[in-house]
Amino acid sequence: MVRRGSRRLVGGLRVRLVVTFVLVALVSAVTATVLAYRDARTAVLQRTQNTTVNDVRERVAAVAAGFDLPPDQRSLSRFAAKVSEGLGARIVVARHQDLSAVSDAYADTEGRITAELRAAVRSGDGARFQRVQWRGDPYLVVGTPVSYADGDRRTSGLEVFVITDLRAERDDTAALLDSVRTGTVPVVVLAALLALLAAGTVLRPVRKLGRATRELAAGDLGSRVAVRGHDELADLARTFNETADALQASDAELRAQEAKARRFVADVSHELRTPLAAMTMVATVLEEDADQLPPDAAHAARTVGAETARLSRLVEDLMEISRFDAGAARLNAAPTDLADTVRASLALRGWTDRVTVELREDVRAVVDRRRVDVIVANLVGNALRHGVPPVTVTLAAPGGDRVTLEVADHGPGLPPEARERVFDRFYKADAARTRTTAVETEGPGEREHPGEREGFGQAGEGFGQAGFGQGSGLGMAIAWENARLHGGTIEVGRGPAGGGAVFTLTLPLRRPEEEGEDA
Image 1 (cartoon, rainbow, N blue to C red):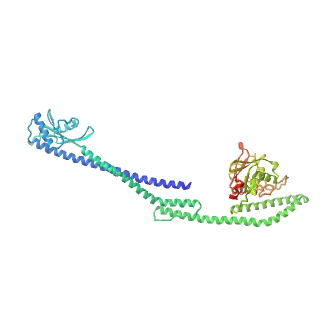
Image 2: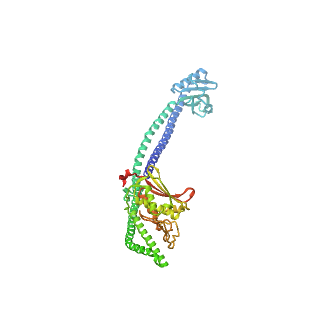
Image 3: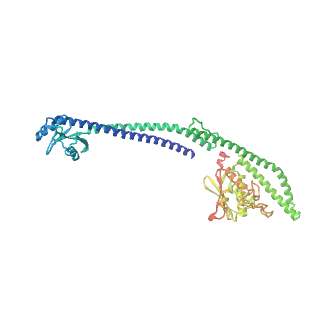
């Protein structure tokens, strides 16, 4: 998941960088297009406008010099035609009081000469012009009054309007806009290519750093990244390498300390076995003769025997835990009838009459019989010691690839904090960790000794070992390690309606024909 997330991160950065480049290029291109179009359109219209105004002034002045006032309709029409001849394809409208003449008899001029322009021309302040839209096309209309040439600048009442078609100018500016718009596409494409190149340059160190981070998270503490340059990415790579160096040094130190601790526990446990064997023999002899001793001496003999057995079992537990920690624990797997294994474990410890069993008979799997016995002894023993009868052991195969062994009691159950830590080493549900006085109770296959009721201890380690565990706090941890060694788990919960504790062992159902694969 980390790897795919990192890839999505890099891909997201690349996409955002490309999109940013493209947006900047697009905004720049659109802005340049709008400005260029506006300036070009203004320049074209301004040039056409100035040229038309100057041409109208000069032509009207030239034609009006030989024109007699007041005109009649025919002379006014000749005047409009002569003005039009010098202005090309422009339409000329001449007005004098109630008379009006048009150079093109078929042209509709009423919609193109506005009342505002007529009023401005009639005021006699010189040439005026106006751009209008008529039937969707642009036109430039220039109007000028004709004044007398006697020096007083009085208007003669003759008004001339020239209509110029601006469709050519509109097409020219539209063509310019199209060319600029067409040029925007390669600009955007080029920006995207540059963005991809920049993204590769920027994100390549990020990808390398992400790869090194994933390798470091996977346990390769020697993973490093090459530092190139002096920018922020180089500083980040340098910081990563320094962090990895510190982590590798700390890991090496912790591993060395852990190895020393495991070796110390194993050495101490090994060294204690010989004196404990001698002490066990002496304690056994004393217990056998306890009935012939005075009451206080008998009590002391039995206490010494119980505590010696407890200490011996604790040493064995520590050695077993050290084997798990060192990775030296191995499965001696063989085809096993799990129902027979459970019954044998209960019978060996004298629990057959105290436990209700519901065992599926056709369940055979490749397991280590001794280690399964350890798990059963711990789960059932703790249920008998700390729960309330009846204790039920159920063997089932709910799926085709797994088998479950459920041990349930009807006691008060475990509080949530105890369920979370019940498989921790040396954890005991009894916070006070009190120890009882020596009490000996002979029963069918069981004997209570000092400390038997301390929290969750081991209920007998090793096939062939009878009796309850002596509260070392390692039994459930060893059971969990044995389950894990088989590729299984142990889960703890509450029974129906919240009553009692339920421990569920789940093992992979490796059938006898699969023995050669993993055994």
